[in-house]
Image (cartoon, rainbow, N blue to C red; front, side, top):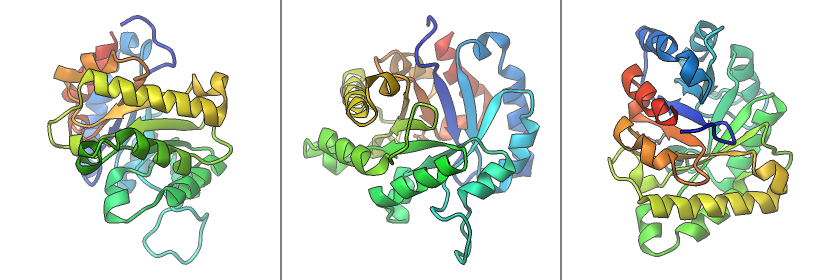
Length: 254
Ligand SMILES: O=C[C@H](O)COP(=O)(O)O
């Protein structure tokens, strides 16, 4: 694939997977992140919070970024069990995923919560990866575009720019199921996201924002999905846990 604009990002979301021994997988990724790949695509791993510090520091010099999977909206305080954006930045994270559908589902996070978390990320110098996407029921009801639109509008805070925002479109029904939308369906949603971003951020800024596709991305379908207009990379779950698969996805950009 020729040099793409904006520069693509392949991000791995390890979810609640990974122990200290998983460091070995990261080392394999670092070794496989060739000069050729570095010339074409950014790589990012978002391990569980317990590994952020170790991964961020193991990454020194390798240029694989480290991100977190969530943050609290407040800077500090009496919020037992929570982790703030300031703490993540302090550990060496440079990105944080906010509004992942699993948090919207299990923690009942709403768009306004996601926007507050993204603001906290920005205030602490982190790039927020804001996730949006419809459920199967919403897709079947023909509501995909309306749902994505509403989530975008509510989840992207004032002060967002191409320097601190990445958007990830993840159809909930495609996550971890092996199912993916058709290239045409992905194109339609990503075009809508781009045009809404232009309305929110202005055209110049919006056109620099990376819009990732997520949901059952693997080496065998990466090339097709990453070739869709306005798809500027991937947010990968299961296939990001193994270096071979993760790098196999990134090679879609070679
Ligand atoms: O954040 C990543 C997504 O939820 C995709 O997960 P998956 O690649 O396992 O389908």
